[in-house]
Image (cartoon, rainbow, N blue to C red):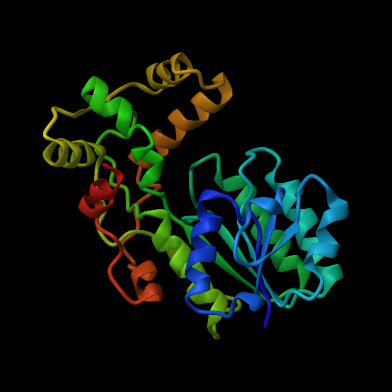
Amino acid sequence: MTIAITGATGQLGQLVLTALNTRLPVDQIVALARDPSRVQGVTARAFDYDAPETLVPALRGVDKLLLISGSEVGKREAQHAAVIEAAKTAGVKDIVYTSLLHADRSPLSLAAEHVATEALLAASGIPHTILRNGWYIENYLGALPAALEHGAFIGSVGAGRVSGAPRKDYAEAAAVVLTSEGHSGKVYELAGDDAFTLPQLAAEVAAQSGKPVAYQDLPEADYAKALTGFGLPEGLAAAIASWDVGAAQGALYDDSRTLSGLIGRPTTSLADTVKAAL
C-alpha cells in the first residue's frame, strides 16, 4: 500500500507526514511537493498543481492519495480537477480530500470551490472520502504577536462560537482515515470538541501571558480596512472579513465530536493550543 500526500511541505501536509510516520513504514509514504528537495525522510516527487506534466508521473504506483486543498483561492477548482483527472489516469484507487466544515451549506465564500471539488470526485468514479475540516485555531493565533503588542485581537466574529482545533488534530484524523478501512464514501464533519468565542480566546491569552489582551469587534468594512492597513491585498482582506461574519452566523460551529471520534481522544483544548503558541 502506497500513500501519497499533496502539499506535503505545507503547514497541514507536514503534520500529516509526521502522523503517517508513526503508522506506516517510510517506504509506503510518498510526499508530493513543488520542491521535493524540502522533504526529508520519505520518498518525494515533484508535483505542481499548475504544471500538469508533473501530475501523472508523480501518481504512478500510488494506491491512496490525500488531496490537500490548494492554497490559492480562486484557482483551486481547476487545480483539483487536474489532480483528480491525473489520479484516474495513474490508477489511484482511493482519494481523501480536505474540504470545509459543512461545505454544502456554508455561507463562507471558501465553500464554493470545495463543493465543486466534491462534485468532481463524485463524478470521477474513484472511491473517495471527504474530510470537511473546521477552522484551525492557528488561523487566529497567527495574530498573537500583534495582539500581545497592542493588547487586542480584532475581527468581526462578535460572539460567534468557533469549533476550532489545531492543525495537528486534523492531520491525525487524515492519517487515521488513510491507514484504516471503512471510510470510503463517507463525509466527515470535523471540528473541535469545545467551541470558543474570540472574547474567550483573548481572555485565555491574557490569562496565560499575564498581559492585557481583549477582543475588539469591528464592522465588516472596518475590519477589512484594518487588514489592508496591515498589508493584505484588498480582495483577501474583504474575504477574511466576510468569513468572520459567516462565523458570527454559526458557520464554524459543530458539536458532533466527529473529529475526536476519529482520532480516539479529545481534541486539543484552546488552553493547550494557546500555551503551545505562547
